Image 1 (cartoon, helix red, strand yellow):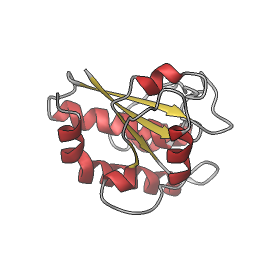
Image 2: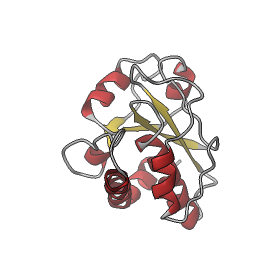
Image 3: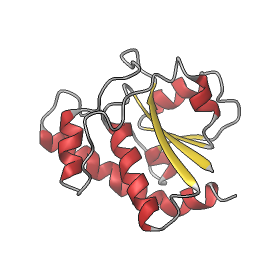
Image 4: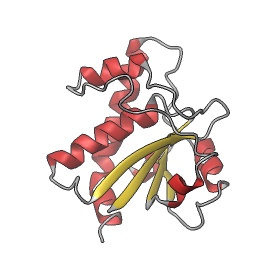
Length: 160
């Protein structure tokens, strides 16, 4: 099984939204049995076991995804090089996170892109933390748009 790893700062908002949105897209295409989706954080506030943001869970519910409070808990990638080493493709939300991932143990040669870069675009996906639900909604929609744009490339990249 191949693994795509989404990375953001704390692994409570953007990477969680990307993880569940891609997992649903893979399930809809019946390829979820060959591609695993994971997420983690690289920021100084990343901690193992933090629960997903309530606002992220609320805007995911609008997409029909009912994510329980502890369905996904955060992983501090600085403390878990095995998660990075187990990834076949790593997609970050920002260029700074891409740089932070590249400096982690276990990255050695693994493809690392920002999500927008992998979708053929420039720029970062901003952090909605501390903002209102409309910002979370816009962030979710941007992640979903980039995932749709890059799904074909992702499937080819992760083909055995």
